[in-house]
Length: 232
Image 1: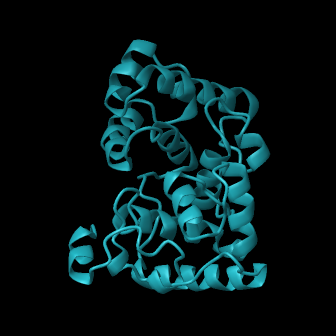
Image 2: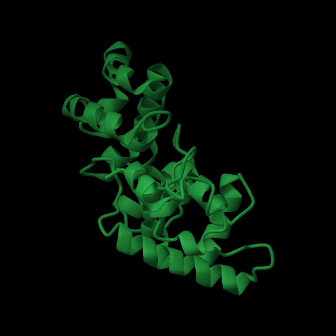
């Protein structure tokens, strides 16, 4: 087990990159788990994913996009009909307003096309830096740090940061990893957080980066018991 108490910036950078390489071996298929076929679909799906699961969003978006396949149609959606479709995702009234508003903004300000720049995406209703970086990284191939709940938790648990502020974590994690790897590194952290490094009871004994983690021992350390906790 390593410690970050006296760890230099260079040592932390090297450790973070070793962690990322190990997670790449454990999760070679890490990817965005929201289903989408266009930047618009990913943008809407990411907004809908707040306070719910990607699985739940993926069950909802086929109906949504069959009825409203583009910004123009969603911008003109009937509120009651839209809310009924979005109800399973929770907070459906607020989400309906957000996806309608961002669609209207895309039509009115960006010619009906989702913008491919961070500074433009964050001007859309309901779109912050996290959502913008998801879209940039996965729909446009622009590297970005996605500070979702798993990335925030694991960045702190791995000793990359002491902050809970998404902006600070985005900057500090970005400083540790090559820019070209940002998007995939976040996918790997998310996969690890969902499958092994759980919030309440991490499976430390089955963790591929246990020897590099200052928080080793926070969860189950017995290899057999830990392996039973791991999710496929």
